Amino acid sequence: MEKSSALIARRAWNDGCWRLHSGSEEEIGKGYDSDAQAFVAGQNIGAITSLVPAGDIVREMTETAARILVTNAGAVITGGARL
Image (cartoon, rainbow, N blue to C red):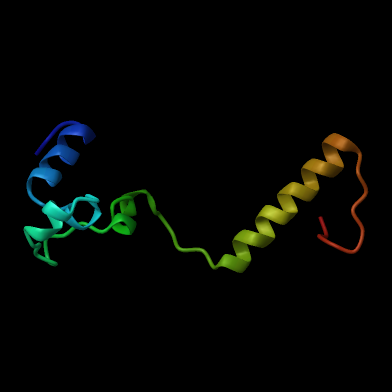
């Protein structure tokens, strides 16, 4: 196992995991194994620790923004988020 993310990326490239994302017709032309192919969305999956519904995220962001506005700017928010 490699000890740095740069070495991991280099190994993945050498193993052909990034052929679809290379932007090179020559690389794509070499063919690829879909079982070994890396897909951009999956490369950071280790950073995900939980799945939160989008509505919950939007509510939390709205409430946080409203709280910042009220606290820091003295703004009055009406008809929107309830703190």
